[in-house]
Image (cartoon, rainbow over all chains, first blue to last red; front, side, top):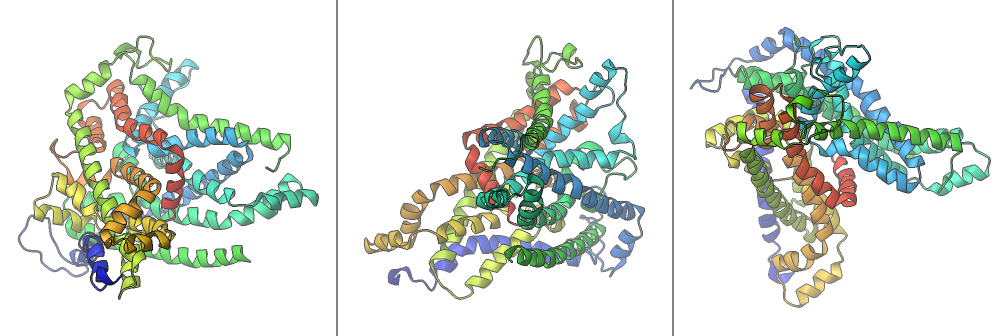
Amino acid sequence: MGRDRPSLTPYIYLSPVIVLSGIFVYWPLIYTFYLALVKWNLIAARRPFVGLDNFHGVFTSSLFADATWNTFLYIFGAIPLKVLLPLAVAVCVWMCAPRMAGIYKTMIFLPVLASFAAVAVIWLWLLNPIAGYFNILLHKVGLAMPNLLFDTRYALATVLGVSAWKILGFNTLLYLAGLTAINRDYAEAMRIDGANDRQIFRYLIWPLLTPTTMFVLITTVIFSVQQVFTPIDMMTKGGPSNATTNLFYMVYQLAFQTFNIGHGAAATVTLFGLLMTITVVKFRLLDRFVKYADR
Amino acid sequence: MIRFSTPWTAAAHVVCIVVSLTMLLPLLLAFGASFKPDNEVNAALPWPTAPTLANYVRVFEELPFARYLWNSLVTTTLRVTGQVALAALAAYAFTRWQFRGRDMLFLAVLGAMMIPHSLTMVPLYIMMAQLGWFDTYLALVIPNLAAPFAVFFLRQHMMSFPKELIDSAELDGAGSLRVLWSVMVPNLRPALAALSIILFLECWNEYFWPLIVTESAASMTAQVGLRKFLNEELGNEYGPLMAAATLVCLPVIVLFFLAQRRVMETFVASGLKG
């Protein structure tokens, strides 16, 4: 390695990635905290320091209450739809003969490839209460399509459902990777000892899949805040009467539609706090469950 | 292969078929509708009886959709090329040498991977405006050139690279860049290909960032073009809308079928980032 001048070369090779991450990831993250303390509309020359006023303004708005409540609804709804359902689907795919399993896997994976913008447009068409495809089918049997996206009772569930449809294939694939890693000899051994199918699932597959399940649970929870942005923006714009907005969409509206940068930044800091809390809980849980799996 | 009892296996097949159809049918219906003439869009038959390209023609006539697709293609290609090149250099530095601050710098890269876009977007937007990059390719490409996941992924692959090959290249008098380019890159081709495809998918399908930094046909991407389509021009005309959705998805799905298995495996790896 003599000719390489190892003292400097590695730093030169690393510098683009480090410098770019510093400028475009770390610096904005810090700068957000500053912006949360000033009043600014993107245009004014002065940015007066207002302390915690922005936080006060955000916390007392009814939009914030709705957005926070909905964020939790999206997270709790994600657990059955985006964590447990893909688990069941993955186990079913795994039980099928490899050739059929491959075909199922490919079909289930297709919505992951389609862009979420396109997926939103497609579901807008399917669900449209007048010209939508489902309405045309229902009309044939004398029923009418409810206006899912403009009814405060169904709108959030519909956005959640579409986002679950979009991500199902991805999470199924993660579980399948976990299932493939299970040594099938164990199942054979249990079978020889007289275990039935139910026992194999209960005492072999479920415990060995726990780390994967925890992993899917945590990534899904963190990403469900971001993942629903596209369907919210394309399908409902947060409405009707804030029924589908969440904290991330609220930040977007504050900063880029009303140009209240201070409020937008304060909401971002709040979101940061929420995500940090989830991350800490995540590492605690992962610690416990990974140890459990090693035993 | 363990065998499960017939009723269980049958139930599994039923579930798989139902789920597969639930995933496939909406996409096929949209594809079919994109070729329907105006008077058939509201028909229950999933495919057209008189297939036509009229919807596609309208997409290109009523909006600069060709330009949007072109913007997507150019910025995605530039960004992915840059991401892979810079990540390869960084991953190479991390695996090849012991140097001061190596672990700390690696932690910094990992940290950048964990910070979601949602937390940096307001200052980034301001930065783009101040630099005068708003509504240009620069805003779409430059801020995303450092891809922490790509560094992490390539580092994993380079760590298992046989040292003997590097040593023998050095004995032949190759410098460090030469070793990277002529010895490592050819041998890492499968990993690099899979990584490029994943990054391509991510960039092509990106919605949020182009939404806030593009405004006109000069830089608007196909995903945001779809939104413009929906909101302004042809929001209730589902034939042209399905044609536009098909155009936006097609490149990615074709790419996927060209490299199916590899993409799925790498997707699993990329899921392990958070």
